[in-house]
Image (tube, rainbow, N blue to C red; front, side, top):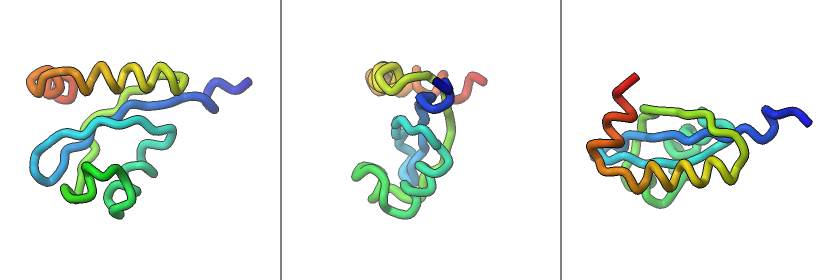
Length: 86
């Protein structure tokens, strides 16, 4: 099996109102385009355009979901550290 087939990524977007949105995708660039076309998550539809700030390659879908939830539970300060630390 090709490992890249099940390679998922966690990403963080900055919305036009300054809020951060965290999601997962196999193809982050395509997903960001979908968000910006108004076909992404309900949360981002009213906060366009969005800008990609952070990506993290995680692995299988289940691992990506767990990491997404971990990031979503972080404080805004910790999310900003994650995004701007590197």
